[in-house]
Length: 61
Image (cartoon, rainbow, N blue to C red; front, side, top):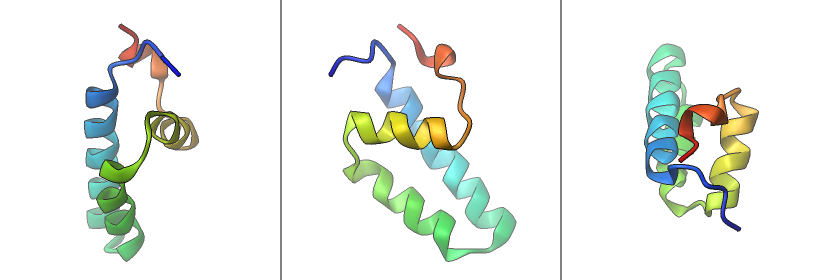
């Protein structure tokens, strides 16, 4: 499915988000989420971004 979204930027921002979460909470969950970003499909990346409250309009092409 074509989301007409800059997936590379969205993926990078999710990695940063989860990395910040890991540092802030000193938790393993943020780290494991960050590590799994590379293996997610575009649809899963979009779903994760929505769940984390990202504004997808920022990533529209």
